[in-house]
Image (cartoon, rainbow, N blue to C red; front, side):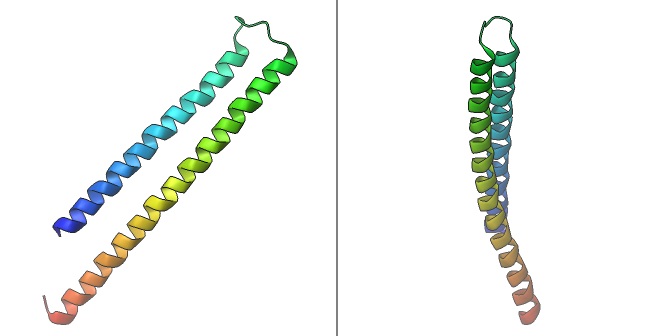
Length: 96
């Protein structure tokens, strides 16, 4: 049981890290929007579009990385669930 609790805590920590990174990614995207709507810059439309597309590309890459990380966590969780189910069946079989 201690091993299962440790693994659950690791999954919880991994999920918290992904959540924090997702928030940072959202802030980066918001910064890109704000920079391009700021009156402090006298950028041409073309420059603003180029900048927005750069931020959009960065956001896409960030989302892809977050998605990959969530898939890894899900696989880890699935394996843990399999282990718990196996242990449950084993305990029933031996009468524990």
